[in-house]
Image 1: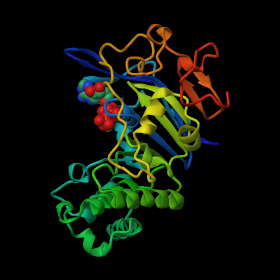
Image 2: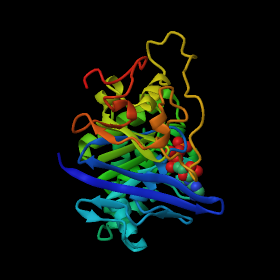
Image 3: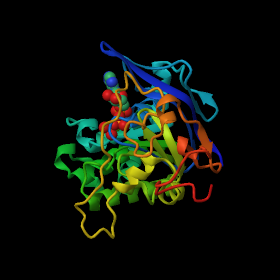
Length: 338
Ligand SMILES: Nc1ncnc2c1ncn2[C@@H]1O[C@H](COP(=O)(O)OP(=O)(O)OP(=O)(O)O)[C@@H](O)[C@H]1O
Ligand SMILES: [Mg+2]
């Protein structure tokens, strides 16, 4: 399958007074054309920093480390100048965020904001063409009364409608890649489902790839072609939605899944959360980053980083439990097929 984006050994650090915060530590993954990749993991594991580095938005004191490679349609982006990133953003790749009120301009009407985005990238279009294309995009996001909506300010809209407007702003230039960072977290469950459905519908129509970021695996269960599980700045497991939901091998993935509320769960209030905290990213553990919280950690896990085991072309995991010599007695998941 054709790759749109290839990330190799991406490392991003923030050089603070307290020390080097190693937010992303040597991750590699790719995004296929027209497919959806989900980045999941709990707060602070490096999802947003990863996303920002893909569109040149890492700001000081942050730095994408020199060994990192971000290859988009065969082109290496890490050496891009600010000007090149500006062209890349919008034209090739757009991003939507959790809070539309923050990322939309409160002083500008919706129609104008969508139009501005388009104008920045399609300078040859007439005013009328820009208006029509902006309106057409807004229509496609399913807002009721799109003409009227063009004349409204963001604060005059509901949360779900604002999210649709933000998606229209992002998609009006028809980028190849849409990065959505927790796009539904602030919304209630019904509206969440509608926004996810909208993204899938636009993907079908316009054929873009999507990177969706979430800490809630339930959100991406139906949508993601591939799921990347991050922990403490690293990828601990990646696979198809099927691999991750039914054949997960990493204790962290397993624990994350235990904390997803199930539809058939009678008592929806009981959620297993994972005990403990993510490690201090200034002093990340020498061995496996998850070993301090892992119920199945062995001595080796503290000492040495686990190697990546490739179970299939799509499914891989970094865990010492994959070693054939590991004692797996009492481990309730994984390796049934290995
Ligand atoms: N500007 C910054 N300065 C210093 N450290 C930062 C900065 N931005 C991010 N970090 C650190 O990088 C790490 C990863 O942060 P990131 O925002 O990517 O987490 P996340 O996975 O998106 O979490 P969340 O689910 O809460 O959004 C965290 O330890 C965070 O404190
Ligand atoms: Mg984030």
